[in-house]
Image (tube, rainbow, N blue to C red; front, side, top):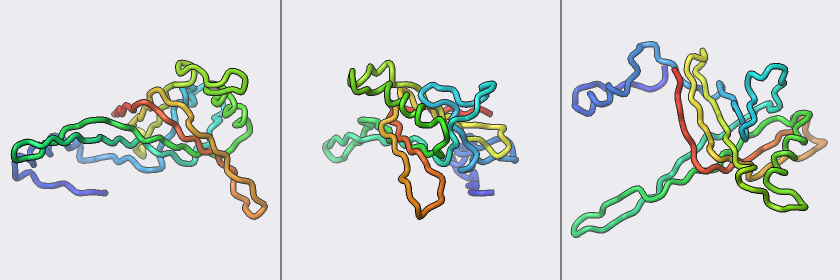
Length: 182
């Protein structure tokens, strides 16, 4: 299995032991067991009679950066957390029939040619990305709170390629919440 375990010879080692899983049969999250449970609060999973609109290809997970504040004391520099920022998340899926109407609906929530930019309450919604262990017994959910599609990009057309067209959407969001279920 990947990784290694450091021994418990010091107090730091005892603290590390607290973070270990109690079971010797650890499960690992991989890059290829995942789905998007909802996008802009539209549920995509387990709806009776619903064929999945999104044929997912790849997805970035939220990245968090914390800006630091430095204050100079008499002899030392002290550092504090100042501001948290969340990088945009991009999702790519294969272009399927029905995708254009979904994209136009998302765009119309934010902007239309007659009334301009819409109200934030109408277009800022929750998006949930889930990662699973290989046997599906555990999952992590990244919820993008107050997300909205910042950019929508269809792949180019070409006579020189037989690849499937894709749609890439970049989601902006206010913050993310990570939860895990065992």
